Length: 315
Image 1 (cartoon, rainbow, N blue to C red):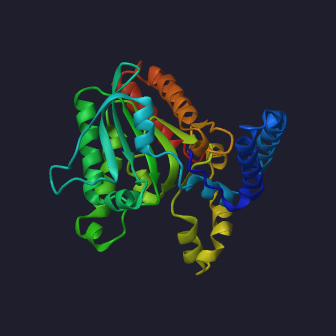
Image 2 (image 1 turned 30 degrees about the vertical axis):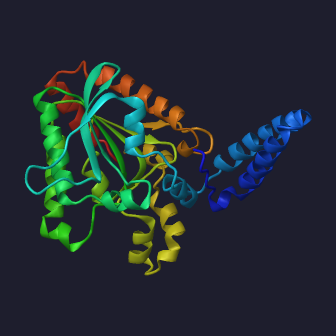
Image 3 (image 1 turned 180 degrees about the horizontal axis):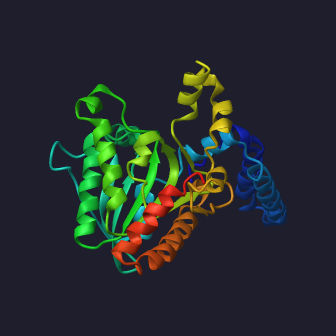
């Protein structure tokens, strides 16, 4: 991304990047600086690799929440052809925090459903910062059943801090909408591949993440609650969120050890926000590979495999 933002722990990387930017500007009139630029680029790459090889859980949380991190809409634009968005739950209205529709994955029709946080202020408000209301989950359920009806594989992108906790959500039965999605996805007779691309927070994430194969981006997080919420509950201090992140084991590597995650998708050096095209290609390759396996299973084999996968969580 052109609008590159650096996190607190990336300060040394930021300093090198600023030097590189200044040198590139100067090199327009002084080509002799090109060799120095190449050396600094090597240093920058080595430094980034060193820092990112030792990230602690709280630093991983910060990367997962990076303001420039790719959203569901970014993946849809780069991975799927002829995407046709579908709207509404046919009961209350449309929730823009859930994007859903039909697209082509290498000429294979698929149903795509995912959280969308929005990028600028207006879009964030429109999409409720990715915090879904009951009508959003009911829209997702409608699309899941539509996918089953037409034998379309389902791909979901999980990226939310959690379901919307406001009174409006409770009035429209938030917990019931999430529970019905869990039941629907558990017995859906079509393949489901889940991609945890950013934040996977609480029941809001779980509502579209029951499936046959769960992929998680290298620096994404997936947990029962946000570290801040956990810290507030246990220690009555949200400032202890870094301690909570460590205790909760929110990272992809920790979750793969206990069979919650089936596959970790490698991110570009320095995080997915540094190269949208590369991370999209990595996700696309994973989707094609896994759907080629799942599509060969009969409906009974698919449901049996899904049931065993769920039972194996934590084993």
